Length: 79
Image (cartoon, rainbow, N blue to C red; front, top):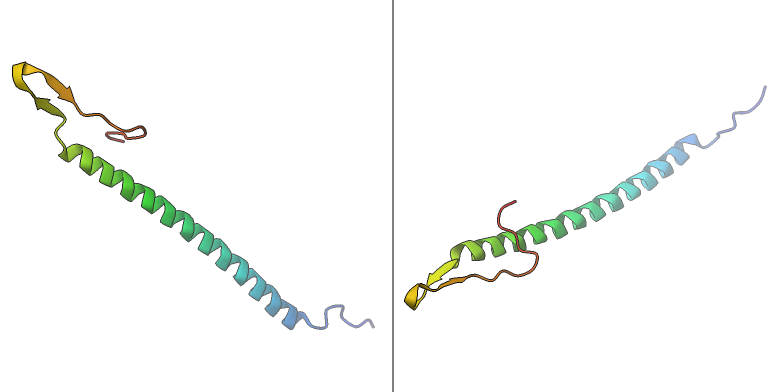
């Protein structure tokens, strides 16, 4: 009776899959960039923690004076 409305369904499906794959690829690349940035931040925090734990926190001076280490803004000790 009537001809099917979708004559090139196979080729359109191929285009749809290619477009979807391209979008997913872009999302993965963006996510990997985010993970890389976060990993850099963790490495910097770990280096600061190691530096803070290996430097003397209390130094005994003559006459029993005590000097405490000065920490930079944003440093944390622990969590």
